[in-house]
Image (cartoon, rainbow, N blue to C red; front, side, top):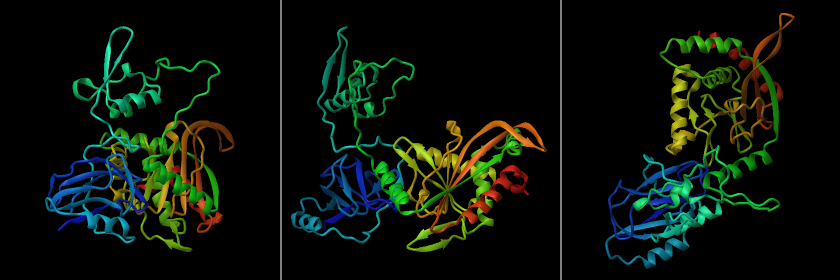
Length: 414
């Protein structure tokens, strides 16, 4: 009997998904647990395994196409089975409740994100330059290269016989010190457009709602990092582990949240949820936008363990291997732009959290110490708060405790 496979909800904020790749075609046999497709969500590209045995009778969303959660993704049944009535009923009756959960595992090999519903045909176009050299390229890759002003002679083809295909254009990174290959004449206006990815749509939707609905206020504080610098140097000199300043910030935040539970809160349906556990989300920049993997029970972990988990999460984020559970359950978030040379900035609260901490870079600057002006290393912190659940005094007390931990790192060890 034919079974409907619907677009799964692979993250708590997912509204629609895009099929990045089909691993089966109509007519192929499919076994339970076998890889069926790769789905691009608002947070990552995930492998999607079949829950049924049978033959793939119908594909409801072509590669590169998007569809809402619970819409018909495919139909699996017996070879030759008539599915017209089933398909009609399924199309007219999309359930609003959760469908039977499919098996989802993180993708072992990242697939280039497909931004539009265009498909790449096998046809090859030959481009000949004035010097007589020839370049073999697919029509879609040629079109995208023209739209992005990419010189095809600078792109290495990975298709058959060195043919340039769409993924080569998507993955092409121009040489930074090279002069622009195409430059518009002086006085000419030009632009390029790129459709939103699922992740970018989610970022726009979630943060726009947060900024509009949550009354933000910001608390700023400077921290003397001289002792933190010395402590990190001593720890790293042992050679067993290497920690970063970000690892120290995560640990300090976790300890401070334990002392100030009214900051470790969520806003949920006009209620304040006081979280007894401390799960810290760490914002990570990826090519499509931003993801926030979560370090769970951070207050019970040391610098080394936090550092190892953060490094692992960053690698997963960069290679699109984060699983939905890696990004769920955060009770507080940290965004650190210090490595980009940013000294001071504010962030938008990541719902449903009540706060997010923005961390700037460490800068050597004159400070007053014991009545004298001496050189010091200062880091600026900015706490963004949702005033519906966190008040100014509450946030200020938290920052004071956080400052004490960072200025006296031994307090986090003993």
